[in-house]
Amino acid sequence: MVFVAAGWGWGPSFFFGVGGGFSVGYRPPPTLDSVLHVAGVVDLGPVSELPAEVWRRTLDVNLAAPAELTRLALPALRATRGRVVFVNSGAGLNASPSWSAYAASKFGLRALADALRAEERGSGVRVTSVFPGRTATPMQQKVHEQEGAEYDEAEWIRPESVVTAVLTALDLPRDADLTDIRVRPGA
Image (cartoon, rainbow, N blue to C red):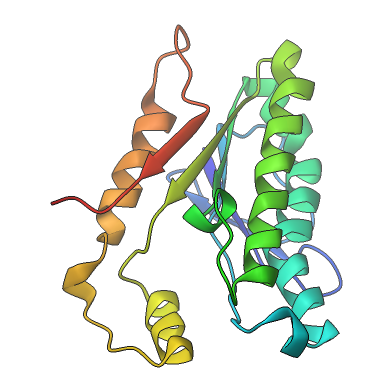
């Protein structure tokens, strides 16, 4: 069973099951094959103009929520020697002007994944970070609006291409591991 962890308010609010059922509650099932972290928020602006609320929301959604949801799912992942996939961002590798809060949250997510990978190596839980470049999603459209730029989804990575990278990590036999995947626009 693969579960996609989602939701954040005063704590983790739900888990969506894919391929094996549906569960709503504060606890994952006793076994999980995978947990996929795919949620994120972005608000651009220079450090001098970003209020604390933007920083808190960005760090809560992009970093604290995946950390807490992973913590809750670890017993079920250990039971199956499962995989955690963090869909990160190219901004988790390189910070740009006006991207400070988002990049900080994604650099933190990278550190979370690296630490988790080392901590769980002995339990058999595998951890993959996927670093897509700009992808044709509503988030990318919002980024373009914030940048004051025209948005043409044909210029960016299709979401299906990022999904293919994630599925490759999920389907990889245990004799190999994909720890970091960078997905960049093709020619």
